[in-house]
Amino acid sequence: MNPHEKRGIYQKTRLHIQALIAGEDDEIAVLATVAAELRHAFPHFHWVGFYRVVRPGLLKVGPYQGGHGCLTIPFERGVCGRCARERTTQVVADVTRLPYHIACSGSTRSEIVVPLLDVRGEVRAVLDIDSDLPAMFDAADQQELEALAAEVSLVYAC
Ligand code: SME
Image 1 (cartoon, rainbow, N blue to C red):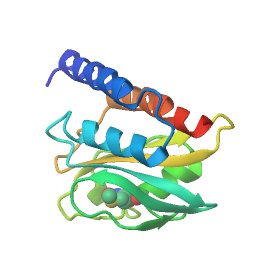
Image 2 (image 1 turned 90 degrees about the horizontal axis):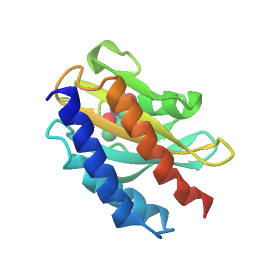
Image 3 (image 1 turned 180 degrees about the vertical axis):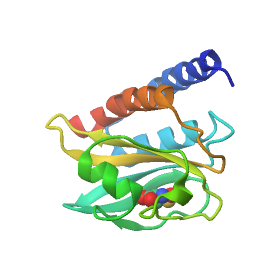
């Protein structure tokens, strides 16, 4: 897939998501819709889902698409925990070389995790996307997914 094709898919998917969630103030309904649309946007997105901050320092699985995901992740653990702790996007080209990676599936090879921040800058959830192929996420994915995350995070303003 060339960069132009990738951008086009993100643009089409974001417009579709915007239409689907317009006016929706329920977090789970919004996250479930986003997970479903993103999972089917790219063939190499093998797991797409959210982990929600359910209390300070603890993530709990939210809506997702793909094989089972682990139920809870403390901020001290995993790529998701680091994303939540540091409030920054994590792009991992090869999860097998990351000692703190939590492998919900043995087939995962690359991963991107994006924080969802509320208007106060507090992390409310993280968007986790796994691929069974190595190095599938780049700066364009980060930029597009961070823009989508900013739009989805409006649900926390309600
Ligand atoms: N890989 C994540 C855990 C979530 S499973 O991939 C769905 C992590 O290291 O935090």
